[in-house]
Image (cartoon, rainbow, N blue to C red; front, side, top):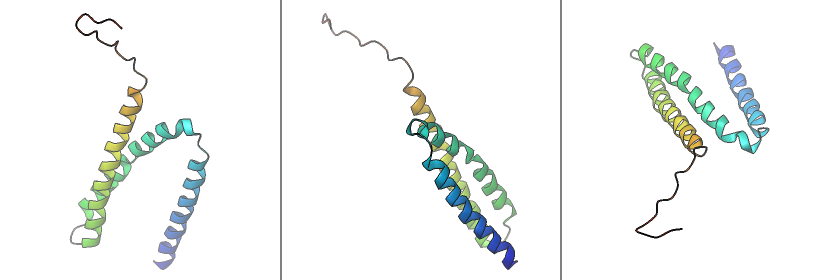
Length: 105
């Protein structure tokens, strides 16, 4: 059991370093689409949290971890869609300005 836990910690640390290296090499223009896509992928975290809550039983630690995963995953998914919507709003044509009573621009 200890070896498995230690291996998971090593994998987690390597994933952090890999993520930092990958994200640091992304051009500035692509940060918003990358962020919104990554946030939408957090739906997997949401599903994992729901699964963890369902299998927690009487284990308080699993229940708390599942609850936090559901809350944080939901916030991240919603945030990803909000960012994507805001980003897509920038590409829509703006309506012409309305003229006021007899004034012309």
